[in-house]
Length: 250
Image 1 (tube, rainbow, N blue to C red):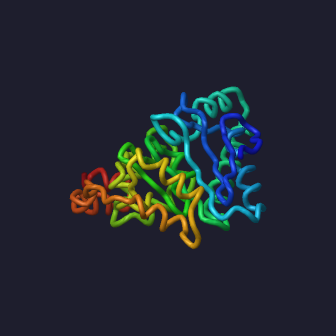
Image 2: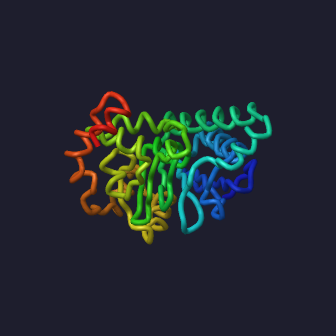
Image 3: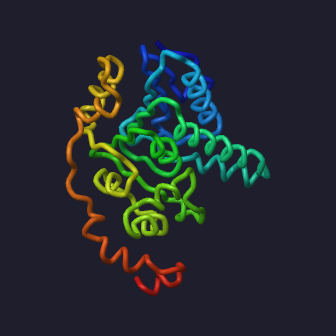
């Protein structure tokens, strides 16, 4: 069943006990702006008060990715036009939406398929069950534009093994699925071709299976993360107390 959303670029549906929120902006790799974030937040509010819902799925359309982040072009245009309040509102709505996912009363499953960066991490990285595929590329690329890792990304980075968090934050390096699981940005590796079967299982599951148990039925073991082999030099170089010291170590 499809429910009415406040933005056509966000599809909101209910299947029995499953609530589904789909980012539908494939031409921009799911980049989100303020109206889209409000629609996602509104869908979460609706599912929170629906006693039938016991799981929420967040995914996207298109072959290239789940969500490439916030719509930086629109933010830049707003700031250049003097609409600072509009830019501030974007971040306010975005952060509240990310927090709502992290604190949601029932499990949230996120498919971080394809490009999932910046604001995409904010939507997927704080879900209780985070799925990556062979096409997944995750990153916190904010330092490339002179910003700082936001959307709760710094919380995730701070909990990565060793100095991996500092490395990913300062270099904006992207992670493949194995890297994302190793760094704590994802939980399960599922082949893209199997995502449809996972959706069906979430929609039609038999009690008492929970979302994690269902995803585990399709979970595969990815190849070892390249970050494992790089830990020695990353931990040494990025142990510096300042960026200048880290640069000297490098």
